[in-house]
Image (cartoon, rainbow, N blue to C red; front, side, top):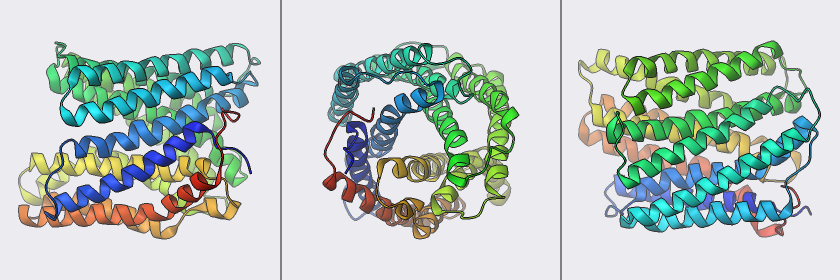
Length: 396
């Protein structure tokens, strides 16, 4: 049996903890248990910094090595990076719920160091590889740069830095840099690399990949700088450019997938996730038309829950869980029950702003319950793998 990459091991453990956190959120929302300090923050960040970042840290060196035919990271560098990112995240998990902002800033700075070390290693790998590297490598290299910017925004919030956009501008820039910059760019590269290989089909429109990358990068820059600098037109321009880049990405992926036979639940997770990614841009106008008003706080709650569960969670299940699990090939296809439960749960999140406030809590709690149910099949696969596999950095 192949040894378990230590980043993958931690990603699996954080996934278990995140499912527990989602279950607790459902119980709190339903009024069954009392509110827990920092629970919402932990539920989101166990998924983003915990699962997604660990999976990306464990995957990117190998991806860069394959696309450039360069060297892999050394064992010592891999373990130092692992210690930094996990030590920093554990510090955050302790400090944030208790309100220890200075300690939390130290944890964020430790993660910043891990990302910087990873980025230096990736650039070094690329420089030692062959010329004419595959066009997906810019996605893999630009993503960590946005993560560094996002962590910088988090440090600004924790330490009270003054910026033109104020505190809420920092929050928005932080989310945009981490989600639409770091996560989305790396995921786009992974999908463009892996979906053709998995389906046995060439990429439908390979010539659009460079344009897709630049549109996503430039759009993400606008989405980060606009809120930070309080320049609304720049933010709107960033959204428009980013949507065009996402449309090109989806056209390529769907055009590649449609001729293929053997659609799987995990492939469905990946493509449907992008529907939920763009829903916030159109949901607010539709809610105003349906209700005559915009219940801002409830729309914001639905948007955050829908983005985390509808896009990030499904990206994790569709793109990263199969990489974390090494069982028989058929077990990597995923579960149609997960597809139905997760997307029905997200749909309930978006229906909740349309109903009365009393019903909103019930629908939101039911949505979280469905998310938990949909996470059980991939969770079971991860638990089996965690128990069965030894740990080694040989795969990094």
